[in-house]
Length: 255
Image (cartoon, rainbow, N blue to C red; front, side, top):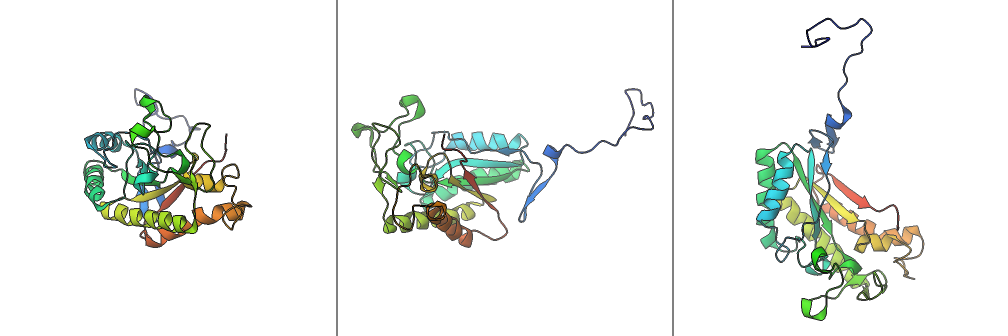
């Protein structure tokens, strides 16, 4: 009923029809249609065990899906163990992880209208870091640190570990890890992928001239610095189902 007032008086002759609020209208990407345009961004929870999502993630992500958002995206999820930011970060680098994510995806699909995506990432030179509440700094020798890699041997901050400059073999291995994780994400039932090329993590650090000082084909001008990130994207796009979308998270400022 379209009443003009609380008592049902007729509308004034010059009143305009009520238009839908854009935020609550559907949005389509390829063959994925979101019920609304509210998206829950990836949020690191630092609560995984060896990359494995836990009950914490089921409740966290399931609750967000039930809250009515059109799309919920799982936190930055490492494609390799050494791509995690911390020991508590999620990963999708083994088949054992698939069932744990499938449980979360199935819950979201069964109990909400939300679509669910996952952000695939490699932390690069910002990996091997302690938990935020444990210092948020480079892991010390007694904290099980791991070697880090980057486009150039430039540490994130003074006092941080120096990443090893990646070789072409390293690039092949990282690219292939993204591809394998994308295949497992499809197996887990995710509706969408997001590739993390922001916040100074590995692919982001290739793009930035501040962190990419390479003199080969993967450095120099913008086209050179974009070459490896685009290579990763194209390889992932080739194995991800054509009807499902991929997004890329970018930083447009190096602070």
